[in-house]
Length: 181
Image 1 (cartoon, rainbow, N blue to C red):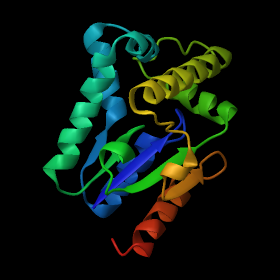
Image 2 (cartoon, one colour; image 1 turned 180 degrees about the vertical axis):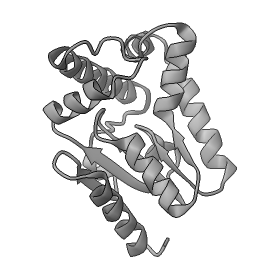
Image 3 (cartoon, rainbow, N blue to C red; image 1 turned 120 degrees about the horizontal axis):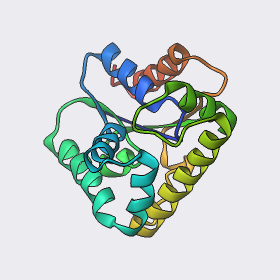
Image 4 (tube, rainbow, N blue to C red; image 1 turned 180 degrees about the horizontal axis):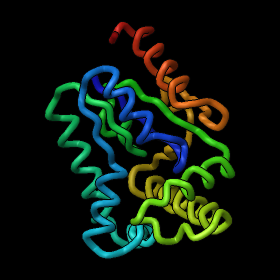
């Protein structure tokens, strides 16, 4: 069983994926962690790395190659990744949406050390918008894919007004509906 969880920044992808994986007793993998690790290795913020990736295809390709290798290796896992659904086509594909102001508050309050640009709520909202558009444009250029297009997914959940437990319950319901749990 492979579950791929995509979504906008601040939608709860990593937290939800970790909880789903824990509930199912299978590994959790995060492309966001790949990106944060790469940013830390380069001594830049995740936004700076994302902007750099616009001009350097090697950054996205490194993340994509890690995802492809994982999907090809087989085994059960839950992955949160913008394009995980594309590189693991046999997965159950979930998209988490969120209103921009909710996303900004979540990201700002998380205070991740690798996201230096999040100095206040307005700046965080602008950084999220910039990052989302940067990633969207890159994926359109590389693969002709818009990861925000809901048609790519088996299940779309707006997490703006519901808690993690409800999101996880909906995902588990989808897995039951396709006889995976």
